[in-house]
Image 1 (cartoon, helix red, strand yellow):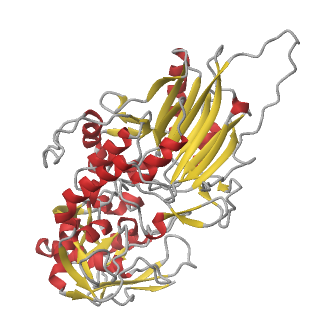
Image 2 (image 1 turned 45 degrees about the vertical axis):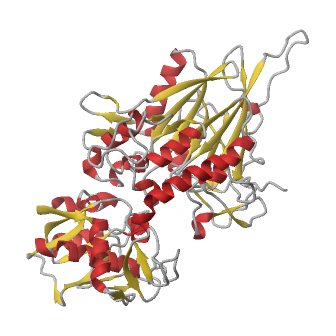
Image 3 (image 1 turned 120 degrees about the vertical axis):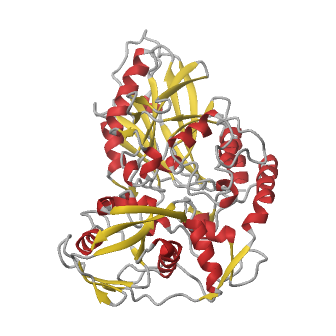
Length: 559
């Protein structure tokens, strides 16, 4: 059976050899120790094999093949590991997870990852979805303060270290979790530093990270590298939850990275750091970048959802304790499904699937056709509209007049075809959860018409576009040919032009109300009140509609 692999690499995934000056004939080469790293990133609680486009990866022939699933991850990790292997991760292992994991605050996924040998992981932004105190509980153990213990009993804590060198508890001016850790393997020490994207405050709920400071990734990595060096650790790996995009049409045998935030970190971090393993962007690549001294170091990322495992091999000089850079080799392996599933993991996943089945399979509503995230030319989507309508309905008793939904919070389509035995057109609780997995709290704030206009202008920055999805009674026109800050016009509510001086009660989830995704105008609102969990509102709305048809995409005009 042929093992499929992805090799997205500069110089065939092998870091460029550094020229070494000729040695005297009598000189003996320093003894070395072999080390292998296996890494995962952006697992997002995908214990069951992901489906659709999220369930495929590109192999070395450029073909999309089925990939992912905990039982296959376990098999591939066992096949790739040797006696000198450490398994690590680059964050977003949990959060935005399917119901099988999220219903129990991702304890099942953390248990699985510890069981397959993960020893250290950077925190990702999604590790903060339920707040940093919940992340501390996941690390240290104990039952959930509201929901209590899961069916498995008292949570014992993660078997691996979460690392957060750049996440600072301001009142103590110290990292909220360990900044680094050291592992001994094959007689040598390897240090691991973890950092998360410094943009985290703009993409997670503000209340969950109150009191935290997110420092520059490079500065924090450098602090930890200096500390590790003081402690005699010279072989250093940076686990970073930040990365880059890849060029459209990039071949599997080339690096393909569009240099961005990830490359900056990989290029600028302390030259003592030998390897940079990244994540966040859900891309796969193995590259070589020069460090501040001009020496090449390996920089990689392994897709998402357990579809790719990154393998890094190197030698450690036993005299100096440092990694021999010329020995670095990297490879991305697709977690194919043409291998036997790990039996213990199959049983583990089935146990949690059975536990959550009664919740997941409950019918909550019906649809006449697919509700998708496919955008109109203006950026409006059928499912985004429905979510916004549901959010307005959930806040009507608080006086809400309109609702806006961030597109990144709509995580999956609702398909007409049955996913199980529920029947075509039936929406289950599990499917609704997949659409709205964050358990954000609904709320509303009072904005003037002028502020609403300014808010809608924040849908664009110099580098991004995020079109807010409006409730049915809110309409506006966009013109992308105009300068940023002057692209929105003809705003109406209930068919009437918005008065710049009048006040309107605008509903949104607490992520947006806290200024998430760069919509800072929300924080200027007054008289904020909170309502139900967004998922609860979505479920109630679907149930109240009877059978729901896709709405016409006519709320946002223009292009």
